[in-house]
Length: 213
Length: 213
Picture (cartoon, rainbow over the protein chains, first blue to last red):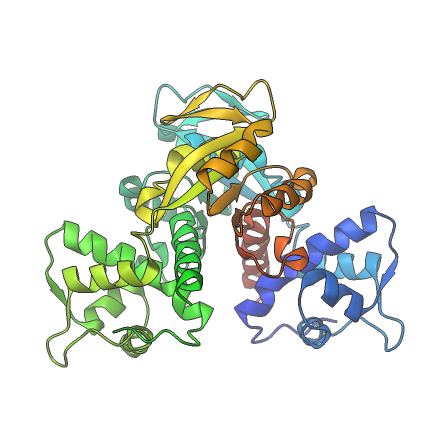
């Protein structure tokens, strides 16, 4: 069984990558893979991969490698992808629409149960199999459906008030696309930030400094 | 002057966050801030912040703190945000549209110079002040404009061939939204990946394991 104490976030952040890659292997009919082969394909060292997987109990056999199907299943279980955690998405602008239509929430452990916006131009629009609801319905929706997670695709100036409201309504985990640090105010929440600007600036840094050297 | 050798990616990834925050401070008229105040607002320790900024030569004065305007400018310079690196975006689906319209490339060090798609339903559409061009025009465009960076918003199955082509056309840095690891094939390129699925799965892991404990 997996041992899961004090696992560093950097290990955890590599798990989805292993999982995606193993799923692809499985889809192409590969049944077995060595940690060396895995490492070449993933651009990591074999020892890194063995160490990472050992954090959860280890799955490979010396000289035999990993059984793709089994490892894929195990990592999926570790990630909790069968959780089906109920999620809502707030903000149906360009980004929210892209996220709602582009992502397969189910495969990643969630069930997208509602999309909300305050703009009359957005309310009532269909995205996938959901209709955008008025944010004024959030309270009733949360009371009834008790979503675990909210994906926040609203502008920065709207997110503090929104996260206050969602916290009051019982939501304790956020997928946050805005540049507002929810966890400073609410240290007890789980926040996964996607800071696209930071990513772009980091890319700029790397280009800038590669050019200089 | 900044000393910039062997700076870890984790330090570099915090710089955009400092920058954003300092810019906000500047906009609200704050002229000076101590590392302690900075740390509280950013949810980091004061010593971490001092250490990070010392990697680049250090800017604060003992007992006085940081001059917001100066520090903001310095970090912007370190990040190379005045670079105006010419960029293209390929894939004008939901995600590409969101990225092209939502992001301020200029503020983050780039100039978005072209958007490309292969679908006749997308070609000719306006996004911001750009018109979506046919991917068949990529070669001529790159020969003339010599973009530094390409943002890849195409489906996974399209990205290998596309990155091959763009590499041939001289592009060596990528903002990659797909789940294809460009750097495995081209170790000499700079790739900044935005893996939304990985982020969502990591959130799932954290929810799943918080529930269990």
